[in-house]
Length: 190
Image (cartoon, rainbow, N blue to C red; front, top):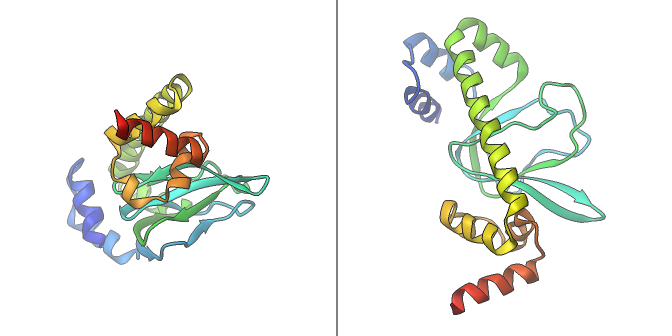
């Protein structure tokens, strides 16, 4: 599976034999079973993830209810907001499916960035793109009705309906499961 990371990096940079060997030797890629909690509320976030295969969600627990804040799939990175800050996490990160991911730590990043400065530059570029997308997504979320949010998800991420339980999708869209059922029924009947 390390080859998947190398293939991904090859889309954006020339991967030297030295970098490829370092990735293969690092045990960077790990597999997780569906339901694995990668980070619990209150834990220190010492790992970030790049999803090669699978699906991960982040969520809060509020008054006993899980509130899904994001859903990540292939070619997406999951970097908890407390990552590398030695602060406890405010939320959970869980595998929704069996997942294979590249796993980073602050120490591994420092080591790789020192040895391969082009990775640090690429990482900063990715971070800028991710931040920009998150800002756009938040603005769109605030301005859209629940039905518009659902339709946008159908257009941009239709695979989530087969991969994520509907109650988690409803939470992700900021609505109750019953409201999602009514929206889906209304769309089907149109």
